[in-house]
Image 1: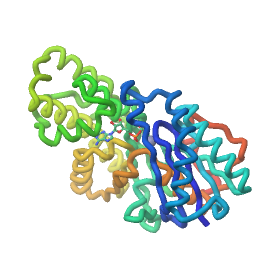
Image 2: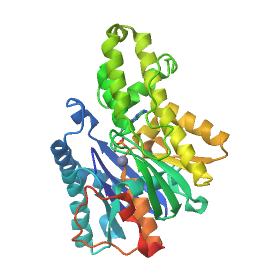
Image 3: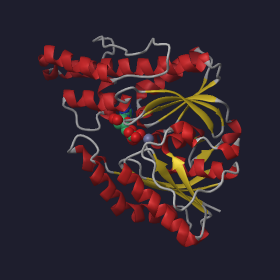
Length: 349
Ligand code: KG4
Ligand code: ZN
């Protein structure tokens, strides 16, 4: 029987129905336009939008899956980490639904769900865990940049994360300096395709450090100083494209080198990647080239599943039930700062 999942950790209201590894529907209502005029996500506006969108999004997800609430087997929602009031909307709605339907409820860790999105592929999307193998997973978005060692299904260890800005934040803040609208990542990606990535030399912070942490705020600052010293550059369309390509190359270089280095050090044969920045074409290309050169398999989340979505939440919830993880309590509260390693599923080991 199917499972209905919700994701409301940031600015996407999403609901999905999954059944036996198949994604029967995945509906995402993005709030990007709403937040764009403020240059970033406004938490209170996000929570209000979730409240407004949750029922229509869930109704559409059920209709597209040709199912109804009385046919559901379980309900799941993102419990954390994320914006507190945004999480609250999805979690409490899901718990209320599970209570009314007398069905099991699962509170899911947002980053743990990202770890499984690269295993979902095809049209219609299906999660293929028969091919699962230990892997090094890069989660890279506007809110997070992390490297995770996924030792087996539901068993993972956080290796490193950003000590300041996330990579997506670096794209967005750099774009703001150039005058691009929020979120600037997709536009930088587009402009960079016609630019020269070697035109300007920007730092690659922490790229050669022994550890697995990242830092991107220094790169953003160096773009700020570069533009202060070269203001005329912003009048020249080709130089803007070169700037976008050069900044993007610095971000991609760090992400790719650190990911591959960690995978080799741990003697893993597989790399996976997810999160909004994984939509970036240069990152996808460079990861592929580096993985091929190092004899590593690569699984990139499909573009629709890179950004936040409830399908990955549903697939992980179903996987947890499959491995015998007990359903959560309906009194579970949100965990806005939930550390990834605490989402480790003891019952499944
Ligand atoms: O996963 P996501 O939708 O939300 C969270 O931040 O959790 O990721 C959004 C981030 C934004 O920073 C956006 O600029 C970035 O992903 N992004 C991209 C691209 N598409 C989205 N960055 C670079 N290139 C892209 N094509
Ligand atoms: Zn995310």
